[in-house]
Length: 145
Picture 1 (cartoon, rainbow, N blue to C red):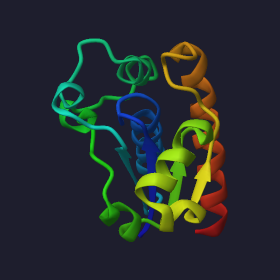
Picture 2: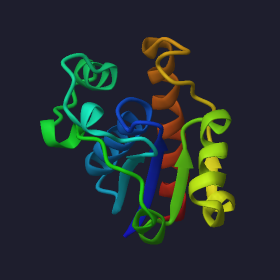
Picture 3: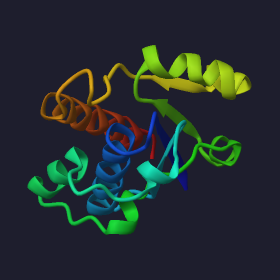
């Protein structure tokens, strides 16, 4: 099974949305590929499910039913890199520095997208762009499979 890792800062918004949407598309199309998400900075405060999560809201508007457990952020660890075939960092400006500091041997393995955090760009502007990027990514994987 082909595995993809989406990396975000807190694994609450961009990476979580990309992962859950990607997996929903794979399930819908019966593609044997699985996505995971993780973040550089997970702590007890952001591990709790927030009442308002733009990724969860947008997925709901798209008709995707998401379990509460699926929204729990995951701390980025080496095991994710070892298990995944493709690694995507959600924002080069933010995450390249973090990768160099915490996982320098993995820097070249990553693909870097350019989607800003919810504090820099409104989620309703960012999520549709990430949605299209995920669809494009999956189309490429379908060709390989």
